[in-house]
Image 1: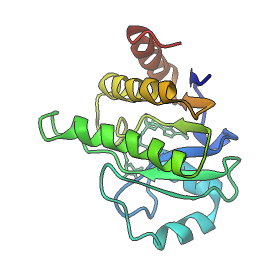
Image 2: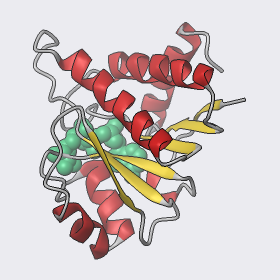
Image 3: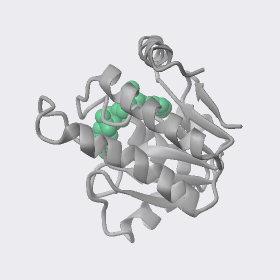
Length: 171
Ligand code: APR
């Protein structure tokens, strides 16, 4: 039975099989959650990332977690929001789906997601949360995952996620 959880915390503190990084196409680090993950993981993370040749928007690549309590980091690149009619929803869906695909490929059973694209990239958080939770619900129904965790970074974001989950009848 898969649990879909919403936990307001710093994603770098979670001891799960994989935490997801909201990266940019270079995979060489940045601000926001990307910066927090690289700071917590230590310099070996960017070393491994720099050998991956970047990551197209909507795709996902896995690395070790190094000094993080998480075993792995799954790096994905969400879309920059340009109003919603430039294919952003599809690209965000692809990002979440590819993270699950990579996790399954590596037999990972616990995964934690930040609000991909909802910070610097400007994606409306409620719309993004709906996409994330809908896909999580599909993945839970397929089986194979013990824990799927969404990690809002403040109480306002947590309310957005809890409202979206309630609207979808999740949890
Ligand atoms: N734990 C959990 N969530 C966090 C953390 C953290 N330690 N730090 C930030 N967040 C939240 C933000 O509050 C936001 O809701 O992660 C969400 C995603 O925001 P960003 O990190 O800005 O990511 P994104 O909007 O996808 O923009 C990606 O920002 O940092 C750069 O290199 C990154 O260029 C890329 C861009």
